[in-house]
Length: 221
Image (cartoon, rainbow, N blue to C red; front, top):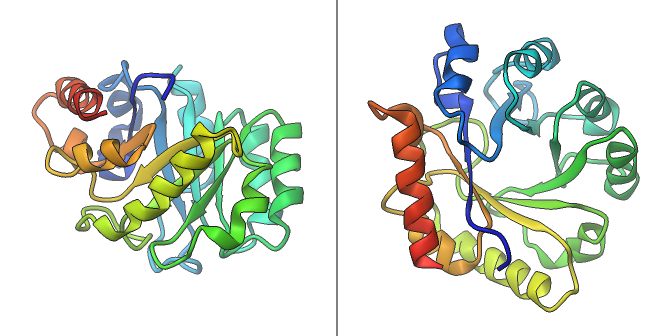
C-alpha cells in the first residue's frame, strides 16, 4: 500500500446549518465526504447539487460526493462539472457504469463505484477497471450512525489483492460505522480511505479525532 491512510470526514454527521465551519474544523482531512441522497434509491433525503456548489466555494478540501440516487447516468456529471474531486455512483443504480466513468473523468473528476453490503464484487470487476475508487459500504446506505458490518471486508480483501497485483488501479474506500473500534480491522483488510462521520463530528475536537483515527489505521496496516 503506497500512500498513508486517508480520512474522509462525512458531513452527514456535521451541523448542516454550519457547513462551511464544519468543513474548516477538519481542514487536515484528505477528502470531505458528502452524502447525496434522493429519497428514492435510499429512504433518506439529504442535500444536492446547489449545496455541493456552495460547499465547493467554502472549502479547499477535495469533495468526495457519494451519490445514493436513482439515475446517476443523468445527474452525476453535474457534480463533476461543479468541481467535485471524486464522484461515486452506485453500481446498483447506474444503467451504463462504464460510459458513466468515462463521462465523469472527461468532466474532470475521479470516478467512484459503490457497492451496497449485499452486492458482490466479482460480477463488477471488469467495470471497475474503468474506475478510480471503489467505495465498499459497510452499512446499508441511507442513514448515518449505523453499526459496522465486518462481513463486507472480504470484498475489501479481494479488491486489495487485485490492486496490489496490478489488475486494478483503485483507491479502496469504506463507508459506514468507521470509528476507533472498527478502523483497525478495515485497515488490516486493505482499505486506503476511511469515511468517518459521527466518529469525527461527534468529538469535542473533530480534527484531533480525525488524526487519532488516521494514526490507528496506519498502525494497523
